[in-house]
Amino acid sequence: MRTQVAIIGAGPAGLLLGQLLHTSGIEAVIIEQRSADYVLGRIRAGVLEQVTMDLLEKAGVSARAHAQGLPHDGIELLFKGARHRIDLHALSGGSRVTVYGQTEVTHDLMDARAAAGLTTVYEAANVRVHDFDGSQPRVTWEKDGQAHELRCDFIAGCDGYHGVCRASVPEGALKTYERVYPFGWLGVLADVPPVSHELIYANTERGFALCSMRSTTRSRYYLQVPDTDKVENWSIEQFWAELANRLDPEAREHLVTGPALEMSIAPLRSFVAEPMRFGRLFLAGDAAHIVPPTGAKGLNLAASDVGYLWNAFADHYGDKSNAGIDTYSDRCLRRVWRAERFSWWFTSLMHRFPDTGEFGQKMQEAELDYLIHSRAASTALAENYVGLPMDFGA
Ligand code: FAD
Ligand code: DHB
Image (cartoon, rainbow, N blue to C red; front, side, top):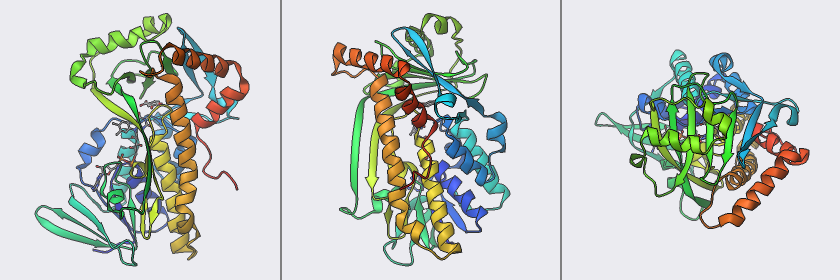
């Protein structure tokens, strides 16, 4: 088999890249190690930046996100027992975010791919990438007991943090930066109306909490838990009781509880691998970087990487220019590091750290107090939360 771009991984990065390339008439085959149902079963991100919505539109898959996504013009910060609104729309000069689940984005992309008759190989075992330092890269895998090979011009490594692409780069060609946080997020998805019509980010003595949603009838809640905690240690009743404890009295009164559709713990990590290109292998999304989830940048960064990569391939095949390919890594990393900084800062501001004690909490409260009263500080939060542009200028 031969194609122009071999995409490893059918997460949001791989599927979006496939769709964007299709609009430019560039052939791509996606190789995914899991089944489509497994990929759709992962409950992850929920907040889309305008940059991501624009890319979904360019890929021709934004109709449902526009119709069913919830536009949000603000968020609430809860600290010292009271909530304070940050007017994202006014402070960012008219931008907003859209609450629309990663599962739905993935669904829309899979449907579009199937409708266009494009090839995705699911349940591919032992996926390997070869010869990307030369001019004829290859991908090999096994399926149903048979060995397969795909020859291509380029490989897009969209295979997430645990994928094979970054791991295939020769040692020494890669520099990694990492910070692991001493806590995780215990998440619950439930068919109950959200406690508030906007997201609440809560800094409390008991730890961080986040009230989010997927629709007007489906809520997504998170609690900071120690990194040693296990989901088996929690019943749904304990979860609701702890969440109520971390809310202000009014929110507590409005909290509607119910059975969990899903409950899991995600670890928190900051991670960047540089560079994001090796010869004809390009890393995109979680394959190259991880942000802690506070501020919802993971999926959005995956989308902007893919936006740069699509432009690079379109220039290569269309204008016969390699400028986009040559600058891909630098352009991505500039936006990646800004999002890493914001996610690290927002995480540091909102969570209880075991080693900083009461002084640490006082510092956080003082910063939050400054944040809500300073237009400059709340503007900086709003600008980053709604998402930085893809083109920063020189
Ligand atoms: P992924 O979604 O990880 O997709 C990679 C794909 O590659 C997967 O389908 C995987 O099966 C496949 N793959 C892996 N290895 C191979 C291989 N060897 N061969 C072939 N295929 C392979 N972000 C937020 O903004 N908010 C959140 O609340 C949030 N929660 C999260 C919770 C968890 C548990 C995790 C892991 C992430 C969360 N994120 C969140 C981050 C966000 O979901 C990711 O940034 C986003 O999924 C990145 O997309 P991706 O396509 O780069 O990677
Ligand atoms: C969600 C996740 C986030 O990390 C965040 O900052 C906001 C919302 C969510 O899953 O809904």
